[in-house]
Amino acid sequence: MTAITDSPDAPRAARRPQMGNPVLRWLRTNLFSSIPNGILSVVLLAILAKGIFSFVQWGIANAVWLTPANDSSACRAVRGFGACWAIIPEKYRFILFGTYPFDEQWRPALSVVLFIALFYLSSRRAFWRRELVYLWIGVLALISVLMWGGVFGLSFVSQDRWGGLPVTLILATFGLAFGFPLGILVALGRRSKLPAIRSLSVLYVELIRGVPLVSLLFMASVMFPLFMPSGFNIDKLLRAQIAIILFAGAYLAEVIRGGLQAVPRGQYEAAEALGLSYWRKHRLIVLPQAIRHVIPPLVNTFIAFFKDTSLVLIIGIFDLLTTAKTAIIDPAWQQFSVEVYIFVAAIYFVFCFAMSRYSRGLEAASGR
Image (cartoon, rainbow, N blue to C red; front, side):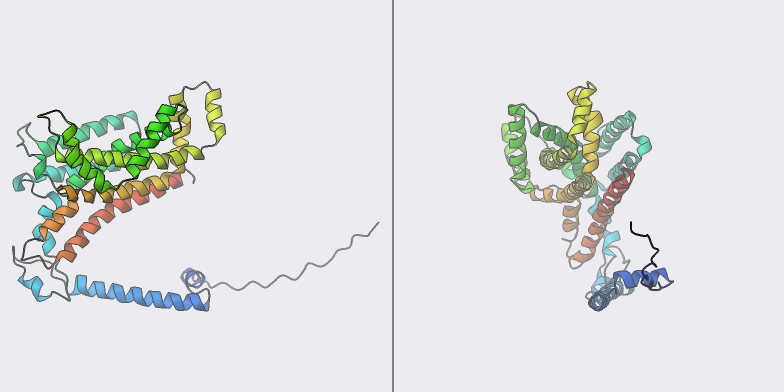
């Protein structure tokens, strides 16, 4: 029997003393962990500092913020080394609302506010009840009344006069609101055991995903009226909306199908063991888990479709980007398109960044 003897512990490596300042510690860990990383960090920081300095000098220090009405002489004087932000207060109403009657532009402005309020309430979990569906129906009906008019003393405004941010929000909201349930149905159809339903679902997805959105918009604008009864005409905006819904449904179907495949088989078997019907099984057990798995790609798809609404300019619909391009046709302001595009890009960024931050909150709340 061997004797057990105590052996001295092996000498431990001395810990490197850490710098007390957390900022210096973060810089050393992330930017200057080695000589090559340090050189690269210095070069990139120098380029970033140069870019920020140039933008501040152009966009703030030398910029023109206000000018007399329809007078761009002060902007032309600083062209090349200073921004002309005066074009925004000069043209913002046309950029945001297009050719909507000037005296009635409070109606699309209120519609935008209602859209934003509806998005905010829908993002709060405390409002995730059945009443939220009725709220959506009521608010969308109110927005339709505001935009169209013709009732309650409001003058009628045809869809040909709509434009700007309300059109972008209408196309994106209705496209995703109807495309999402369509995508769920198609995703379930692709996993169906019935050959006819599965084949139709596969055909729909592959056909829609096999062509660009521009082609669908052209088809909806040109070919769709040919299939309508004689004397029956569908508005151009509605045709574009149908194309966007079909396009969104095909892409969302593939994202949701990936989430359905990620749900463990045991969850299906447990739901069947409880005696749940097909629809209750998916509504209560499978779909909540599937959607939780695919929150990032879902939000990425939402953001992409929100920006893709700008393609409707191909068929002559005045969305936000189209009204911005039209606003700088004026010869007096034609040289200052960069400022207009920065303004429009900021609007797109606010909406897309809000969706991105909300998705991160959902991921954190779901424990992923």
